[in-house]
Image 1 (spheres, rainbow, N blue to C red):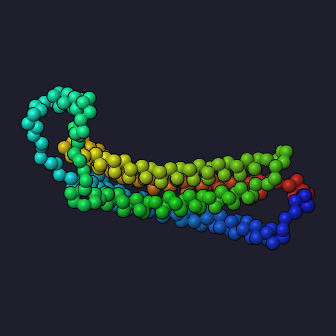
Image 2: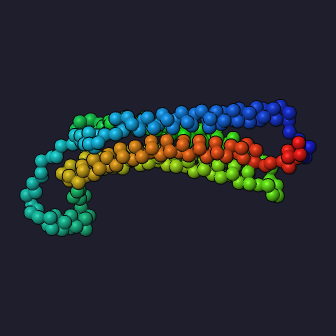
Image 3: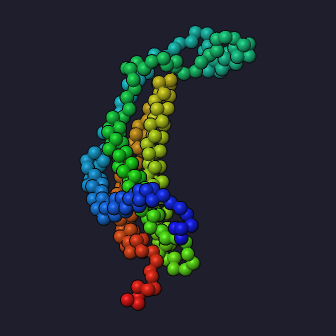
Length: 256
């Protein structure tokens, strides 16, 4: 069949070397790296940094003081203020009433992130990236083992396809963990901006605390899921390694 397509010998040699390298890396990942990593993550789940019982310990102080109230001499209630704003807008006046507090600079300089959560995130993110990269290598290995399409005797091929699908699912879930971390930072930044503009509203401050606590719990769940995914992949591939490496049994093998 190779005569139907002319392939440069040098390129073919390099491709074969690539296949051998992927095979060697993937088999080592399944046999050694996956079990070591799941034990490492299981130990990490027992670390005090991720098992804080009182979540008040992870709270971050928001150093934004509440300004003194502004006394309005001409406007005595909220209804008159709304009517005055409406009149000014209708009259096309240049000076429109602005709600909230104008924020040009933070009083204490840059508003810091939650240091405890940042430290924990910096420990979890490399684990997420590692899982994505290793799953990609193993997925490529299994895909390269899939034989050419034929009628019948495809039970082993279906196992290979199921393995690839599981690896792809794990990759997608791990990538979603990174999105979750990004959304946390964006959501918190918006809330802190609200606090700077409306420092007298306590609910914004409480919401930041709730967001921090939620993210801390989510990070522990992520580490647990990473461990579980290593366990699942290791177990699944080992149980089906024969069909993954030899998806089709040759009838001639039984004759000898």
